[in-house]
Length: 249
Image (cartoon, rainbow, N blue to C red; front, side):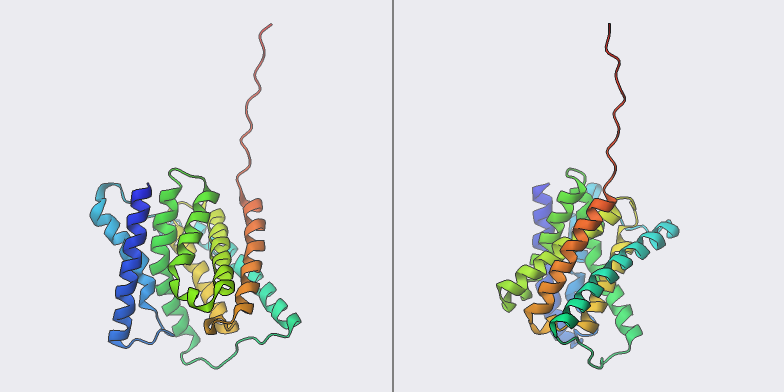
């Protein structure tokens, strides 16, 4: 297992560099779409090439009712975490980000859905289910959250406080998604993509963490940590009752 996770992660990191270079080469505005988001999906492609027979992806879009129900749940959790973050900003007198956007909202939503799907094909549709073949949901979610967060290497340039808070957010969000997805096998990609897009849209529209400002990242990290604790406790499977045994005699 360690070998495959390492191969996937190293391939994703290397392909990220390629996609960043390609972004600059074609002149695509990163505010509209970041090509690096497709690196995890390409990393899965590498796994299919190297381990074709035993590589699987939980990316089916059916049943639609499960996707809709779980997506609504996770969007509600996102909305709650964002609302708490906004409230803290207001109380602390910190500005929110309401600048006029260069692109219409529908275009940003569409491109963020596409980009989020590129990421989640790797993180939640491939890596999370693969880790869960050996480990529990929580341990797998924590591992994916760490790897996913560290993959955003550009965040380290903003200092240890910013990056520590960012890692707290990715780990916590990963725990939330792991808890929601544990009862939605085969629909990981659709549900995770919806959640990822909702988070990205909210952060893009409301907060100024893109400038490297640590305050919004710390607030969101703590809000998501609280959401992770509540979600994990609320959605963890009930313990299976063992049948009573009758002693001889």
